[in-house]
Image (cartoon, rainbow, N blue to C red):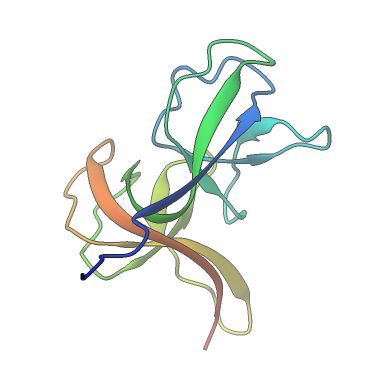
Length: 128
């Protein structure tokens, strides 16, 4: 019997604040560790639901296929990282600088705010 493998690896953690407006954006952990919106270029995971208050659990996508909200036009195959608002933007490290990549776009997205399919698989992209 053939199998297709795991499609998603998920986890659940408490939120540090109301993240109900941040579904499908990048989040990471604060010092406690609770979920918070990820900042520009930080390691991030994609928030799958809408935790409405501090302490409410939020589900995050650690690896696999999912959706993310983009902050700029994106083409399929491009590597993405969070911007300051937790939106997915092109990972384009400057010369000699490393940047955290959180996922790869599986489809094009034309406008900021579009929801696109991605494959989450974190790694560091080295600047040329």
